[in-house]
Length: 138
Ligand SMILES: [Zn+2]
Image (cartoon, rainbow, N blue to C red):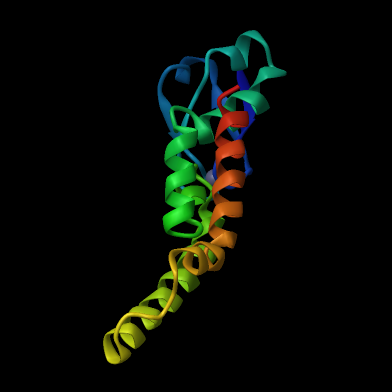
């Protein structure tokens, strides 16, 4: 007996056999390792929810919050959302340039309040990743 489940990473359909329950299979689309849940063969409707919770399973909302606050997008990558790299990479480049500029001209004349204001997007991203992790663990 085989069933189809969705890859937690790319969302592609993967055929798995009943005897694969408890082990993992390689996704034919993106080569991600996918755990085959036993519920897949007991309750077919649970497959989507299971693969979705696997993406965020055992990830702490607080960890995602702190990562996204300090490094924009890193919290998403932490939660298995690889598109977070599209935020993280430009952020690293920009903050790298910012650090270089700081070494040239000395520390910026920011007050802590202004620095916090500058990182408002980081706060928003942090709360978003926090909620995402919380929903995934429910
Ligand atoms: Zn895949």
